[in-house]
Image (tube, rainbow, N blue to C red):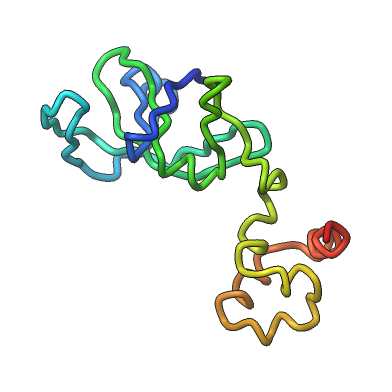
Length: 147
């Protein structure tokens, strides 16, 4: 399903309306209280998981279910996970130009020594070794060539 969303960096979570929730039939996770932009406090159902995608960027997240046909919101948590930014001049969402190949972003953030020499990955620590196991061998070759 393709959904047009308002990008709201002041909102933390994704917000979908009841119509989208009915179509996707997402599982109920919990109830949460949220403070809205006007200062009012409301309780919302949280549902998920949602696999959100923008260009080559993806995020697995949960969403608050907004009443009726409210405009869906893309909040800061899914934006951070997808590594996307708001371009204020063009007033649009863009892929982070510093990290255009999102599937490698986690490895790159842990240090260029990993990207430069996979054979020395054991020296970086347990966190990186765990991360190493989540990527396919072909991805390692691409990382090595990109630096």
